[in-house]
Image 1 (cartoon, protein in one colour):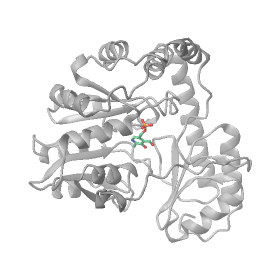
Image 2 (image 1 turned 90 degrees about the vertical axis):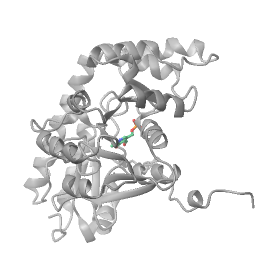
Image 3 (image 1 turned 180 degrees about the vertical axis):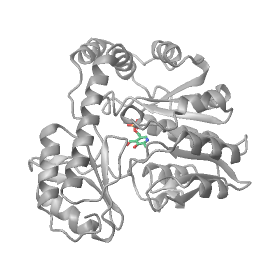
Image 4 (image 1 turned 90 degrees about the horizontal axis):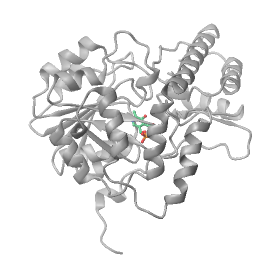
Length: 356
Ligand SMILES: Cc1ncc(COP(=O)(O)O)c(C=O)c1O
Protein backbone atom coordinates (compact mmCIF):
# COMPACT_ATOMS: atom_id res chain seq x y z
CA UNK A 1 0.00 0.00 0.00
CA UNK A 2 1.36 3.43 -0.90
CA UNK A 3 1.14 6.31 1.56
CA UNK A 4 -2.21 8.09 1.44
CA UNK A 5 -3.66 10.60 3.86
CA UNK A 6 -5.78 8.69 6.31
CA UNK A 7 -8.31 11.50 6.50
CA UNK A 8 -8.95 11.26 2.75
CA UNK A 9 -9.58 7.50 2.61
CA UNK A 10 -12.21 7.94 5.32
CA UNK A 11 -14.08 10.72 3.50
CA UNK A 12 -17.38 10.04 1.76
CA UNK A 13 -17.09 10.95 -1.93
CA UNK A 14 -19.38 13.72 -3.20
CA UNK A 15 -22.50 12.02 -4.54
CA UNK A 16 -23.84 13.11 -7.89
CA UNK A 17 -27.63 13.26 -8.32
CA UNK A 18 -29.11 9.98 -9.54
CA UNK A 19 -29.30 9.84 -13.34
CA UNK A 20 -32.35 8.34 -15.05
CA UNK A 21 -30.47 6.29 -17.67
CA UNK A 22 -33.05 5.04 -20.17
CA UNK A 23 -35.69 4.35 -17.51
CA UNK A 24 -37.87 7.26 -18.61
CA UNK A 25 -37.58 8.79 -15.16
CA UNK A 26 -36.98 12.51 -14.72
CA UNK A 27 -33.84 13.71 -13.00
CA UNK A 28 -34.75 16.37 -10.48
CA UNK A 29 -31.78 15.68 -8.23
CA UNK A 30 -29.10 18.21 -9.20
CA UNK A 31 -30.84 21.59 -9.45
CA UNK A 32 -29.99 21.78 -13.11
CA UNK A 33 -31.59 24.25 -15.50
CA UNK A 34 -34.09 22.31 -17.65
CA UNK A 35 -33.74 24.69 -20.61
CA UNK A 36 -31.35 23.70 -23.38
CA UNK A 37 -28.47 26.17 -23.87
CA UNK A 38 -29.31 29.34 -25.77
CA UNK A 39 -28.45 29.14 -29.49
CA UNK A 40 -26.33 32.29 -29.16
CA UNK A 41 -24.26 30.64 -26.42
CA UNK A 42 -23.93 27.38 -28.37
CA UNK A 43 -22.67 29.35 -31.41
CA UNK A 44 -19.96 31.03 -29.36
CA UNK A 45 -18.88 27.69 -27.89
CA UNK A 46 -18.81 26.09 -31.34
CA UNK A 47 -16.61 28.89 -32.65
CA UNK A 48 -14.24 28.48 -29.72
CA UNK A 49 -13.78 24.79 -30.44
CA UNK A 50 -11.22 25.58 -33.14
CA UNK A 51 -8.77 26.82 -30.50
CA UNK A 52 -8.99 24.07 -27.90
CA UNK A 53 -5.43 23.00 -28.71
CA UNK A 54 -4.36 26.15 -26.84
CA UNK A 55 -4.39 26.77 -23.11
CA UNK A 56 -7.02 29.23 -21.90
CA UNK A 57 -6.13 32.57 -20.37
CA UNK A 58 -5.72 32.14 -16.63
CA UNK A 59 -6.94 35.67 -15.93
CA UNK A 60 -10.23 35.43 -17.89
CA UNK A 61 -9.80 39.07 -19.00
CA UNK A 62 -13.07 39.61 -20.85
CA UNK A 63 -15.21 37.95 -18.23
CA UNK A 64 -13.40 39.86 -15.51
CA UNK A 65 -14.00 43.17 -17.24
CA UNK A 66 -17.68 42.42 -17.78
CA UNK A 67 -18.36 41.28 -14.23
CA UNK A 68 -16.36 44.11 -12.68
CA UNK A 69 -18.44 46.63 -14.64
CA UNK A 70 -21.69 44.84 -13.89
CA UNK A 71 -21.15 44.79 -10.14
CA UNK A 72 -19.17 48.02 -9.93
CA UNK A 73 -16.20 46.30 -8.32
CA UNK A 74 -12.49 46.14 -9.15
CA UNK A 75 -11.06 43.42 -11.35
CA UNK A 76 -8.88 42.49 -8.36
CA UNK A 77 -12.02 41.47 -6.47
CA UNK A 78 -12.74 38.58 -8.83
CA UNK A 79 -11.41 35.02 -8.81
CA UNK A 80 -12.67 32.17 -11.01
CA UNK A 81 -12.89 28.43 -10.78
CA UNK A 82 -14.27 25.32 -12.47
CA UNK A 83 -17.69 25.88 -10.96
CA UNK A 84 -18.32 27.71 -7.72
CA UNK A 85 -17.61 24.46 -5.90
CA UNK A 86 -13.99 24.81 -6.96
CA UNK A 87 -13.97 28.41 -5.76
CA UNK A 88 -15.42 27.24 -2.43
CA UNK A 89 -12.54 24.81 -2.25
CA UNK A 90 -10.07 27.61 -3.06
CA UNK A 91 -11.57 29.73 -0.28
CA UNK A 92 -11.14 26.92 2.22
CA UNK A 93 -7.57 26.10 1.14
CA UNK A 94 -6.61 29.77 1.26
CA UNK A 95 -8.09 30.28 4.73
CA UNK A 96 -7.93 27.09 6.77
CA UNK A 97 -5.42 24.30 7.39
CA UNK A 98 -4.91 21.60 9.99
CA UNK A 99 -6.47 22.54 13.32
CA UNK A 100 -8.49 25.40 11.85
CA UNK A 101 -12.27 25.44 11.90
CA UNK A 102 -14.79 26.19 9.17
CA UNK A 103 -18.37 26.85 10.23
CA UNK A 104 -21.43 26.21 8.08
CA UNK A 105 -25.10 25.50 8.63
CA UNK A 106 -26.24 21.91 8.46
CA UNK A 107 -27.98 20.68 6.52
CA UNK A 108 -26.54 22.72 3.69
CA UNK A 109 -24.53 22.16 0.50
CA UNK A 110 -23.10 18.63 0.79
CA UNK A 111 -19.69 19.64 -0.53
CA UNK A 112 -18.81 21.93 2.43
CA UNK A 113 -17.82 19.25 4.98
CA UNK A 114 -15.98 17.22 2.34
CA UNK A 115 -13.97 20.16 1.02
CA UNK A 116 -13.09 21.30 4.54
CA UNK A 117 -11.73 17.87 5.42
CA UNK A 118 -9.81 17.60 2.15
CA UNK A 119 -8.03 20.78 3.22
CA UNK A 120 -7.18 19.14 6.55
CA UNK A 121 -9.35 21.60 8.49
CA UNK A 122 -12.20 20.81 10.87
CA UNK A 123 -15.83 21.20 9.78
CA UNK A 124 -18.13 22.80 12.36
CA UNK A 125 -21.69 22.12 11.21
CA UNK A 126 -24.33 24.13 13.07
CA UNK A 127 -27.87 22.69 12.91
CA UNK A 128 -30.55 24.67 11.11
CA UNK A 129 -33.43 26.02 13.14
CA UNK A 130 -36.61 23.96 13.46
CA UNK A 131 -37.89 25.97 10.50
CA UNK A 132 -34.91 24.78 8.39
CA UNK A 133 -33.28 28.23 8.36
CA UNK A 134 -29.72 29.25 9.24
CA UNK A 135 -29.37 29.61 13.00
CA UNK A 136 -27.04 32.59 12.78
CA UNK A 137 -26.93 33.26 16.55
CA UNK A 138 -25.81 29.64 17.06
CA UNK A 139 -23.28 30.00 14.26
CA UNK A 140 -21.90 33.16 15.89
CA UNK A 141 -21.73 31.32 19.21
CA UNK A 142 -19.73 28.53 17.51
CA UNK A 143 -16.89 30.93 16.59
CA UNK A 144 -13.64 30.15 18.40
CA UNK A 145 -10.05 31.37 18.18
CA UNK A 146 -9.56 28.64 15.52
CA UNK A 147 -12.40 29.76 13.24
CA UNK A 148 -11.05 30.84 9.85
CA UNK A 149 -14.03 30.78 7.52
CA UNK A 150 -17.83 30.71 7.68
CA UNK A 151 -20.19 29.72 4.85
CA UNK A 152 -23.68 31.19 4.74
CA UNK A 153 -25.67 29.57 1.96
CA UNK A 154 -28.39 31.96 0.83
CA UNK A 155 -30.85 30.66 -0.29
CA UNK A 156 -29.90 27.46 1.47
CA UNK A 157 -29.42 24.22 -0.40
CA UNK A 158 -31.46 22.02 0.19
CA UNK A 159 -34.11 23.87 2.20
CA UNK A 160 -34.54 26.97 0.01
CA UNK A 161 -34.71 29.28 3.04
CA UNK A 162 -33.18 32.74 3.03
CA UNK A 163 -31.24 34.82 5.53
CA UNK A 164 -32.68 38.30 5.95
CA UNK A 165 -30.69 41.51 5.63
CA UNK A 166 -31.26 42.30 9.31
CA UNK A 167 -30.14 38.82 10.38
CA UNK A 168 -26.97 39.09 8.31
CA UNK A 169 -26.08 42.49 9.81
CA UNK A 170 -26.63 41.15 13.34
CA UNK A 171 -24.49 38.14 12.51
CA UNK A 172 -21.63 40.10 10.96
CA UNK A 173 -21.56 42.36 14.00
CA UNK A 174 -20.61 39.26 15.99
CA UNK A 175 -17.98 37.89 13.58
CA UNK A 176 -14.40 39.04 14.20
CA UNK A 177 -13.09 41.09 11.28
CA UNK A 178 -10.29 38.60 10.65
CA UNK A 179 -12.73 35.77 9.93
CA UNK A 180 -14.01 35.62 6.34
CA UNK A 181 -17.74 35.10 5.80
CA UNK A 182 -18.61 33.59 2.42
CA UNK A 183 -22.16 34.18 1.22
CA UNK A 184 -22.82 31.34 -1.22
CA UNK A 185 -25.36 32.65 -3.69
CA UNK A 186 -25.54 29.76 -6.15
CA UNK A 187 -29.33 30.29 -6.31
CA UNK A 188 -29.50 34.07 -6.04
CA UNK A 189 -31.25 34.55 -9.39
CA UNK A 190 -34.22 32.54 -8.17
CA UNK A 191 -34.49 34.47 -4.91
CA UNK A 192 -37.62 36.61 -4.78
CA UNK A 193 -37.62 37.22 -1.03
CA UNK A 194 -37.70 41.02 -0.61
CA UNK A 195 -36.19 40.72 2.89
CA UNK A 196 -33.30 38.55 1.79
CA UNK A 197 -29.72 39.62 2.31
CA UNK A 198 -27.93 40.36 -0.97
CA UNK A 199 -24.31 39.28 -0.90
CA UNK A 200 -22.93 42.11 -3.00
CA UNK A 201 -24.35 44.75 -0.62
CA UNK A 202 -22.58 43.04 2.27
CA UNK A 203 -19.35 42.66 0.32
CA UNK A 204 -19.40 46.43 -0.20
CA UNK A 205 -20.06 47.19 3.45
CA UNK A 206 -17.85 44.71 5.30
CA UNK A 207 -14.11 44.01 4.86
CA UNK A 208 -14.52 40.31 5.67
CA UNK A 209 -17.28 39.25 3.29
CA UNK A 210 -16.95 37.33 0.03
CA UNK A 211 -19.70 36.21 -2.33
CA UNK A 212 -19.86 33.04 -4.43
CA UNK A 213 -21.70 33.02 -7.75
CA UNK A 214 -22.11 30.35 -10.41
CA UNK A 215 -23.02 30.13 -14.08
CA UNK A 216 -24.37 26.60 -13.50
CA UNK A 217 -27.91 27.30 -12.34
CA UNK A 218 -29.68 30.37 -13.73
CA UNK A 219 -27.33 30.59 -16.74
CA UNK A 220 -27.57 26.87 -17.49
CA UNK A 221 -23.84 26.23 -17.91
CA UNK A 222 -23.47 23.44 -15.33
CA UNK A 223 -21.64 21.23 -17.81
CA UNK A 224 -19.02 23.84 -18.66
CA UNK A 225 -17.95 24.55 -15.06
CA UNK A 226 -17.73 28.26 -14.33
CA UNK A 227 -18.06 30.04 -11.02
CA UNK A 228 -16.44 32.97 -9.28
CA UNK A 229 -15.89 34.75 -6.02
CA UNK A 230 -16.29 38.43 -5.37
CA UNK A 231 -13.83 38.89 -2.54
CA UNK A 232 -11.54 41.40 -0.86
CA UNK A 233 -8.56 41.91 -3.22
CA UNK A 234 -6.08 40.19 -0.89
CA UNK A 235 -8.35 37.14 -0.63
CA UNK A 236 -9.02 37.01 -4.38
CA UNK A 237 -5.24 37.12 -4.99
CA UNK A 238 -4.84 34.08 -2.74
CA UNK A 239 -7.65 32.27 -4.54
CA UNK A 240 -5.74 32.70 -7.78
CA UNK A 241 -2.64 31.28 -6.06
CA UNK A 242 -4.60 28.27 -4.80
CA UNK A 243 -6.50 27.58 -8.02
CA UNK A 244 -5.55 24.73 -10.32
CA UNK A 245 -3.77 26.39 -13.27
CA UNK A 246 -5.93 26.61 -16.42
CA UNK A 247 -8.94 25.24 -14.51
CA UNK A 248 -11.43 27.43 -16.37
CA UNK A 249 -11.58 26.54 -20.06
CA UNK A 250 -11.77 29.07 -22.85
CA UNK A 251 -15.14 27.55 -23.80
CA UNK A 252 -16.43 28.30 -20.31
CA UNK A 253 -15.06 31.84 -20.33
CA UNK A 254 -16.60 32.63 -23.70
CA UNK A 255 -19.89 30.99 -22.79
CA UNK A 256 -19.91 33.10 -19.62
CA UNK A 257 -19.50 36.31 -21.60
CA UNK A 258 -22.13 35.20 -24.13
CA UNK A 259 -24.50 34.47 -21.23
CA UNK A 260 -24.00 37.95 -19.83
CA UNK A 261 -24.79 39.27 -23.33
CA UNK A 262 -27.99 37.19 -23.30
CA UNK A 263 -28.93 37.96 -19.74
CA UNK A 264 -32.33 39.33 -20.59
CA UNK A 265 -33.26 36.12 -22.38
CA UNK A 266 -31.87 33.99 -19.55
CA UNK A 267 -33.76 36.02 -16.96
CA UNK A 268 -37.02 35.28 -18.78
CA UNK A 269 -36.24 31.60 -18.31
CA UNK A 270 -35.48 32.18 -14.64
CA UNK A 271 -38.87 33.90 -14.31
CA UNK A 272 -40.53 30.82 -15.80
CA UNK A 273 -38.69 28.58 -13.32
CA UNK A 274 -39.72 30.81 -10.42
CA UNK A 275 -43.34 30.62 -11.61
CA UNK A 276 -43.00 26.86 -11.85
CA UNK A 277 -41.56 26.66 -8.34
CA UNK A 278 -44.53 28.67 -7.10
CA UNK A 279 -46.91 26.39 -8.97
CA UNK A 280 -45.27 23.25 -7.56
CA UNK A 281 -45.39 24.62 -4.00
CA UNK A 282 -49.06 25.57 -4.38
CA UNK A 283 -49.84 22.17 -5.89
CA UNK A 284 -48.14 20.32 -3.05
CA UNK A 285 -49.97 22.41 -0.46
CA UNK A 286 -53.28 21.77 -2.18
CA UNK A 287 -52.51 18.06 -1.86
CA UNK A 288 -52.01 18.48 1.88
CA UNK A 289 -48.22 18.64 2.07
CA UNK A 290 -46.68 21.05 4.52
CA UNK A 291 -43.87 22.70 2.57
CA UNK A 292 -41.99 25.87 3.40
CA UNK A 293 -41.40 28.55 0.79
CA UNK A 294 -38.30 28.02 -1.31
CA UNK A 295 -36.32 30.80 -2.93
CA UNK A 296 -34.19 28.54 -5.11
CA UNK A 297 -34.86 26.24 -8.08
CA UNK A 298 -36.05 23.37 -5.92
CA UNK A 299 -38.53 22.53 -3.18
CA UNK A 300 -37.84 20.75 0.08
CA UNK A 301 -40.11 18.00 1.30
CA UNK A 302 -39.53 17.67 5.05
CA UNK A 303 -40.32 13.96 5.17
CA UNK A 304 -38.23 13.17 8.29
CA UNK A 305 -38.30 9.50 9.26
CA UNK A 306 -40.58 8.79 6.32
CA UNK A 307 -37.99 9.92 3.78
CA UNK A 308 -36.96 6.49 2.51
CA UNK A 309 -40.55 5.39 1.96
CA UNK A 310 -41.60 8.60 0.20
CA UNK A 311 -38.46 8.61 -1.90
CA UNK A 312 -38.94 5.00 -2.96
CA UNK A 313 -42.51 5.81 -3.97
CA UNK A 314 -41.33 8.81 -5.98
CA UNK A 315 -38.65 6.73 -7.70
CA UNK A 316 -41.24 4.11 -8.51
CA UNK A 317 -43.14 6.79 -10.37
CA UNK A 318 -40.08 8.02 -12.19
CA UNK A 319 -39.20 11.01 -10.03
CA UNK A 320 -35.55 11.16 -9.04
CA UNK A 321 -35.09 13.75 -6.30
CA UNK A 322 -32.26 14.04 -3.80
CA UNK A 323 -33.12 12.25 -0.57
CA UNK A 324 -31.43 12.83 2.76
CA UNK A 325 -32.53 9.89 4.93
CA UNK A 326 -34.18 10.99 8.16
CA UNK A 327 -34.47 14.58 6.92
CA UNK A 328 -36.17 15.19 3.62
CA UNK A 329 -36.17 15.16 -0.15
CA UNK A 330 -35.07 18.01 -2.38
CA UNK A 331 -36.82 18.11 -5.74
CA UNK A 332 -35.46 20.44 -8.41
CA UNK A 333 -37.76 22.63 -10.46
CA UNK A 334 -37.67 21.08 -13.90
CA UNK A 335 -39.59 21.49 -17.13
CA UNK A 336 -43.36 21.98 -16.93
CA UNK A 337 -43.84 18.33 -17.92
CA UNK A 338 -41.38 17.10 -15.29
CA UNK A 339 -43.02 19.22 -12.61
CA UNK A 340 -46.44 17.89 -13.61
CA UNK A 341 -45.12 14.37 -13.24
CA UNK A 342 -43.70 15.21 -9.82
CA UNK A 343 -47.02 16.71 -8.69
CA UNK A 344 -48.91 13.65 -9.95
CA UNK A 345 -46.52 11.36 -8.08
CA UNK A 346 -46.76 13.43 -4.89
CA UNK A 347 -50.56 13.40 -5.09
CA UNK A 348 -50.66 9.63 -5.32
CA UNK A 349 -48.58 9.09 -2.18
CA UNK A 350 -50.40 7.69 0.79
CA UNK A 351 -51.07 10.26 3.49
CA UNK A 352 -49.58 9.95 6.94
CA UNK A 353 -46.00 11.00 6.30
CA UNK A 354 -44.66 13.83 8.48
CA UNK A 355 -44.51 16.04 5.40
CA UNK A 356 -48.23 15.66 4.85
C1 LIG B 1 -25.06 26.10 -2.55
C2 LIG B 1 -24.23 25.65 -3.68
N1 LIG B 1 -23.04 26.22 -3.88
C3 LIG B 1 -22.26 25.87 -4.89
C4 LIG B 1 -22.65 24.90 -5.77
C5 LIG B 1 -21.69 24.52 -6.85
O1 LIG B 1 -22.16 24.71 -8.12
P1 LIG B 1 -21.16 24.82 -9.33
O2 LIG B 1 -19.87 24.20 -8.91
O3 LIG B 1 -21.80 24.10 -10.44
O4 LIG B 1 -20.98 26.29 -9.59
C6 LIG B 1 -23.88 24.26 -5.62
C7 LIG B 1 -24.29 23.20 -6.55
O5 LIG B 1 -25.25 22.51 -6.39
C8 LIG B 1 -24.68 24.66 -4.54
O6 LIG B 1 -25.86 24.07 -4.32
